[in-house]
Amino acid sequence: MSDYAGQTIALLTQHGKETVIAPVLEPILGCVVQRIDGYDTDQLGTFTRDTPRPGTQLEAARRKARVGMELSGLPVGLASEGSFGPDPFTGLFPWNVEMLVWIDDRLGIEVVGMAQGPAQGGHVQTGDWAAVEAFAEEEGFPAHQLVMRPQDQDDPRLLKGIADWDQLKQGFDTCLAQSSNAQVFVELDLRAFANPTRMARIAEAAQDLLKRLQSPCPACQVPGFWITERQPGLTCSSCGQPTQIHKAEVWQCPGCQHRVVEPRQDRRFADPQHCARCNP
Image (cartoon, rainbow, N blue to C red):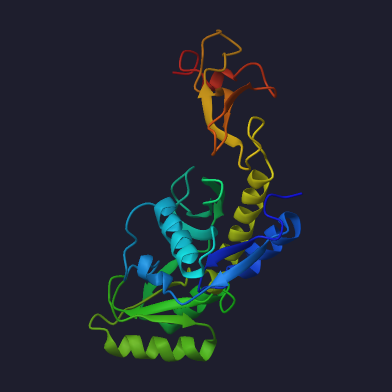
């Protein structure tokens, strides 16, 4: 039986994230994910840059989880936080990282699930309605909602939640009339309920969290026993020198801190292309 069978889990959200998180966790863990509201999570940072997010993505998720636990009085809380930036491979494409933090004050543990991948996150600055129409179609509007402002990306006059073509045209006309440079800035609304691509990524993060919660520590049986480190040093198949490719994984308990080092089983040697000596 799951450690969380019959437990109610506080989830602080005002953007509908419970619709993709609860169906993943509840059937397997036997818990109830309770949506907690009454707190404006936009106070902790917005993607539209009008409220900067203090601290890291993980710290923001922790704050949300703690607020939900305090408001509900529940000992177990859950929160989601997303981030957007350039992809880690080429730096050319928008990339989304989603993080789910699970805090259990009964067991004194924190477990973090993650998912990442390509994002819908484009923008356009233009004074041409046809260009806005083309951008909207390319980005999957109206399923993916839009945000608009006059002049440029830093203008504080902001229209959020644009979800149909009439709203889009009215918003464009309004922003263009307010603009002193005959330009309108349009971008994706990255709030979860307004961005199906992001919502799917949150569901993936919930699946990752579920796997971790189903992994008990071999020493104390607390859930969340997972990989915390990968140790480099896999031997080059050509020259025999250690490389930066990992040779072992370190598994650790979030409760008792029990650690197990597991040597890599899927390969014994690194390709010479990853060797500083063979491929300097």
